[in-house]
Length: 278
Image 1 (tube, rainbow, N blue to C red):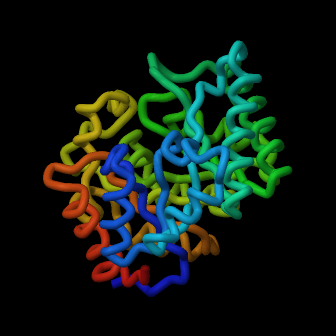
Image 2: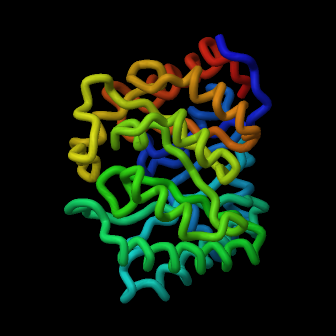
């Protein structure tokens, strides 16, 4: 068992899809006190953020972050992308939530050209500048099957954006799936980490740049914590090494049984094997 940390723990309700009520009730019943939800689900309450806060609180939950996905390298949509991210951040700010996860867009046809990455950096940084003005830190989440997937693309985005504005959100399964060692990436960019997704990936997944995780079938590569190939004790030790004390959010894209059973397995691994406290 790894050493107990004081990181706040959250879980993503993605496995419940649009059944927010059941997801909240079952996550709370397992002892979780915070969650991520689908962004469109949260923004259904955009005109009354307090109502969404109260809805979560009715189950003893609070919101840890929301995800904003876009193709950041597309110059034609950059203005709209920044405006939408600012809109989400304004909603988060009203809830006293200080993190937004920026997810790059797909589909992916190969390594992203340098000029596209430069454009992506410009859009990401402008969006992060807007969110920072609202008290919300933007954290880039590399994602399989998108324009920011491989190590070279991560390095380019980290080098091409202001560290005071743009944070980093490592997802342990997506990094592993793209052929990287999450421990190495976390150690390299530890000072920029502002949010973390803890996710596992099957040991027999075809790890590397050709892994396609953009479709529904591909989500079967992801699995409950402790049942795949991610070395979570090493991940936790490295997060402690770099001084990260922020959110750790459990995420499972799909379940072979029920969302409750899958999250129960993850909860038991977090508490029993990693020594974390919900």
